[in-house]
Structure formats: C-alpha cells, structure tokens
Amino acid sequence: MVLIFGGAFQGKLDYAKENFHIGTVCDCSDGRMPDFTKDAVYGIEKFALQCAREGREAADFFRKHRTEWQDKILIISDVSQGIVPMDASLRAFREMNGRLMLYLAREAEQTIRVFCGIGKKVE
Image 1 (cartoon, rainbow, N blue to C red):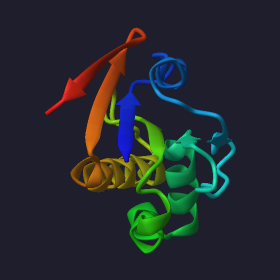
Image 2 (image 1 turned 180 degrees about the horizontal axis):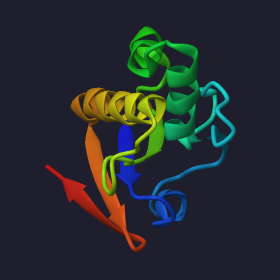
Image 3 (image 1 turned 30 degrees about the horizontal axis):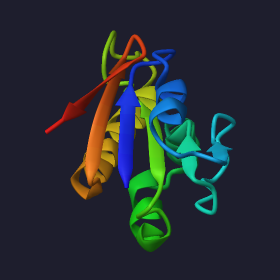
C-alpha cells in the first residue's frame, strides 16, 4: 500500500494519478465508506469525520479490512495543522484522523507527503 498525505488542496490526487497506475478512484469526500475494489481511495479524512460523528473508530474499520487495501493507493488529508477547533466533536475527529494516519503509515510500503503538488517520500 502507498499512503499519500498532505494538507487540503495540495494536489494529492493529481500527484497520485501522475505517479502511479491508477485506473479507478473511490472518492470518500462525502463521508462514504471506502470501496477497496478501486485502485485508489481518496478523501479518507471525510470518512474519518463521519466515523467520529457516529462514535466509531476509523482505524478499526481499516484494521478489519486490511487485506482488501494492501495493494491500493490511500490518500488522506492531514488535518493536524492549524488552529485547534473549539468544537469538541471536531477535536475528536482531528485526533481520530491522526490515529488513522499513524496506523496507515505503519502499514504502508511507501509514505509520501504532498505539498504544493510536490511529493516527498517520508522515511
């Protein structure tokens, strides 16, 4: 699995399409559950937000489906930068997204941070 992360609107999906053989993409930007039959899964942070709203752990979902995404490109926004939200539910989401990113980074064969459309391998 390749994990691609970075801030919002930094060109993560474009970077993935330009650098990996991606035919199909599951877009989770509306909070939908990831479809691991696609080559890449994008907008995973919105799925994590939906999980936080429903009181379930996003990383648990990925652990349960581990064998389904081992050969995929996973794309997630890093929401840990900037001002800490005043709203408790948004802070819980931010922490959950961080836990999910930690899990996925540990499982990844390759982790890439994209900033301004430029990818840099994280080791």
